[in-house]
Each structure stands twice: as C-alpha cells, then as structure tokens.
Image 1 (cartoon, rainbow, N blue to C red):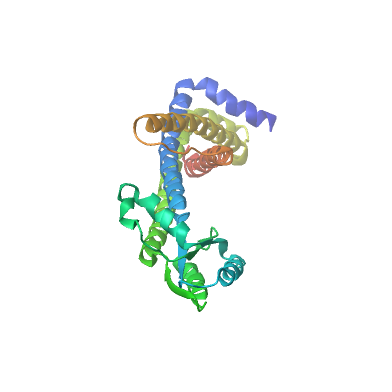
Image 2 (cartoon, rainbow, N blue to C red):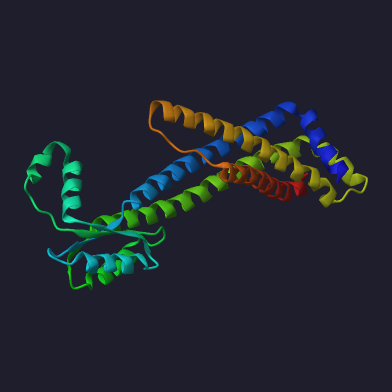
Length: 282
C-alpha cells in the first residue's frame, strides 16, 4: 500500500503539467456540476418556502359559541398531518385583512368578517391529497360554513416540485456521466504517457492489479483535488450571484463533504473505467 501511494504521488512529480491539466479539467467539470447543484438547492429552498404558506382556512358560522370552536381547534391540532391550528376571531380577521391590504384598508371600515380556524400542515403532508383529506375532516364540523385552501395553487406547486425533482435527478446523472468521461480521458492520457514504463513492469512480472492500483489512487487524488477547487469556485460564484443578482443559500458542511466524496468517487470510477479499458492496449 505504501508503494502504491508513493507511485501515485511520483506520477504527479513526473508529469506535473499533465497532472495539473487533469486536475483543472476535473475541477471545471465538477464546477459545472456544483453550479447545477447550487441552482437545484436554491430552487428546492424556494419551493420549501412556498410550501410553508400552504394553509387551510375553515370559516366559522357567525354566532358559534367560542367553546365549540376552541374544542374543534384542539381536535384538529391533534391530527397527525397538522402542525398547528389557530382560532381567529372576527375582530382578528378584520385586523388581518386591513393589514394585508395596506393602502386599501379603508375598504373594510365598518365591515364584519367571519371567524375561522387556520390550519397549517407538517412538512411531508402538504401534497394535494393530504390537504384535501384534512380539509374534508375540518368541513365535517356543523358550524364550519366554508373551506378554502387554494386547491389549484397547491396542485401546481406540487406538480412543479415533482418536475424539479425529476429534472434534477436526470441532469445530475448527466453531469456525473460527463465528469466520469472527462476524468477517464485525463487518466487515459496518463496511462499512454507511461506506456513504456508499464510495458517494462509487465516484462518483470508485474500483474495488472499491481499496475492498476497507482492509477486508481491517482484518479482518487485528482478527484479530491478537483472537488476542492470546484467547491471553491462554486463558493465564489455564489458570492457574485449574491452581490449582483439575488440572495442565495450555499451548501452546508454535510453537502460540501458529500461533494468532495462525490469528486473522489468520480475520480476513482473514471480511473477504473479508463485503466480497465486501455491498459490492455498498452
């Protein structure tokens, strides 16, 4: 193992320009993947913020005893899908409407609005089916006059989330495949550059597994180095986007570590594919 590590590091010293070119190529391919990941992450964050606004509003008939409404609020809050249930009195409903309309608040002067039970759902239960199920249970109370939850808006939001998820998986796999191809090409150049050395090693009895190990480790190291550079470039791109376009979120430590691990695995996979394919031709 020590010799394998030494041979892999020696390859960097023997061909510094080729190694630098390989790392740079890997870095830019992973940088493109990182930018895509950054866009996907921010799209997901935006959709999550929109989902936080998913709410069911059950309007209560005027004159309903507050005790009955309070009991209904307690019952609804116990549903497994429900994050919170709040009783809104007619006075509170009027104050909220005036606040939301701002400059047009005078429209509600002297108006009377119905009270309601405002229901917010837990993450994971904001899809159209779950919202309709909770709304139907709330509608079953005799003093609930109407239910509003923006059904069409929720269906469009859920459809957009599914499309974004599928597109993210497909494009992510495409970027990963391109990265493997690029890394494999860089490793192939390293194999061809050392073809004479490999031929001599075979003449003295070295096995393919013995010859292959330094290249695999070399690909792993290049993948890690390229991943670090790509992560740095992605962070700089995020700073420019924040400054000149729109505020964004960046990968947390767990996602950053997974990115580096992904770079290492891509480097190892690219090396495996390239060496296994071209070593026989040397």
